[in-house]
Image (cartoon, rainbow, N blue to C red; front, side, top):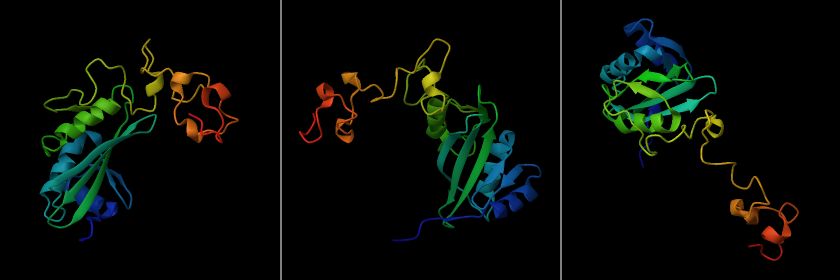
Length: 197
């Protein structure tokens, strides 16, 4: 079985990208390079077209909620050179996050950006079809955000609490076999020795 793609050093990428597009690189580590959010399309296009990187494929686009800001992470891959580039862009506005779309550079961003919008609430400018992918329009909140269960404005996520928080509520009893008999009311689950439910 052939080895997976070699992940390129972020410092190397940052040096080449920064020389080609002055001011686009914000910082770099051994694993990734962070680019200025307003210039993300420009950076992705250069990495795609540069012979040294040949980042022709967007293999993954995802986001991380850091409470105060979001990180949007792009995994770019060259199939010909068997190498991978990791690019990040920081979205500072946690209330109304927005970033330029990667779609003009990578058509594969079409559904991936819709997924990030649906689950994280990050909008992508210049995306041709910016609507939810899994949930329906009007669904309150974005379920992968850290603040999802307390979305506010008189709306709730649909969950009053996480399953198994209230042992007295039999409708919420899940994974009963994982609880000890001391944790579970007898009438709700019985003892572990008797097999429980």
